[in-house]
Length: 323
Image (tube, rainbow, N blue to C red; front, side, top):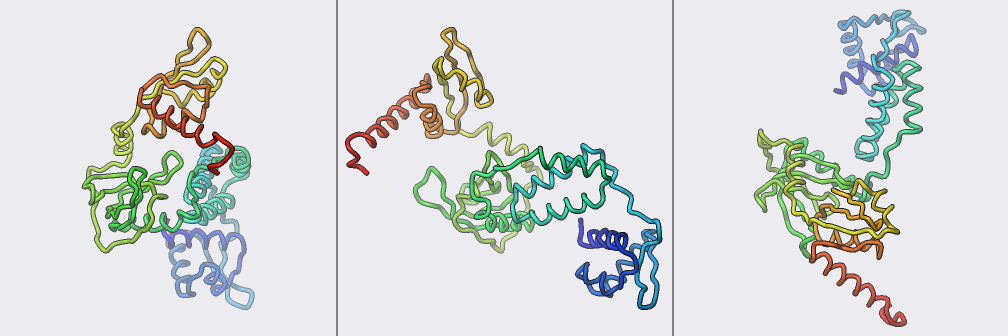
């Protein structure tokens, strides 16, 4: 919604809430000049909004008596969807869109009938989405703001990026196509000029970021949804099979959505299979379950878990001389 449209709606609500308001007072509330205010009044008149003015010390601009903005034509479920969407934007983007989300919710509260307002109040008390970030969102805000601007203005960015697979960070130049929140992390998707292909970059691993003067045009056939689906499918994966001991079978069952398959065994144990991004990730997951889980395959994962378990044992052996 443009600033002009927002101000026109706000002006109608101001006039609806109180008649006989001076031009100077309305201009101050809208943060515009008196000349601009008269222009907005003229625009509303052309739209058929019945506004009249009275001269004198007690006069001013008013809506014709009895005129009310029509309520938004939303069902209670639609109103909840809009309100929860605004709340989710505030949760996802933090301070970048928090004020806008709060403003949208405030306008809904003023415009909606009582039934929809009551439904929204119930939903905001009982249907929550929170804790969606693995990284500190406040710390990421300056980087996200720069990236949002770069995506909007189609400007190349330069960055120092540190991947998990390389000990030293690298200089990258990227044409940013989209910002994506996935699996609790923020990602930048764009064309990497170093690798000469579209890549995904975790935003919390960007150490330095600058907007460059070069502009670009994304390929006409680029579709972010198709890229994300394809990127996940072709990403290197390790196929893992684990056995949960009978006493821990309930753990496998209660985490059913983790596994690609689950097979109950006659002795009460459970076999599960899933795809892991890499061996290190898989080993961390296995060790989190402790002795309740045994790696069936791949053999490289069994070896890595054994190596890590021995290293952990060595750290805690003796009388604490390694501390």
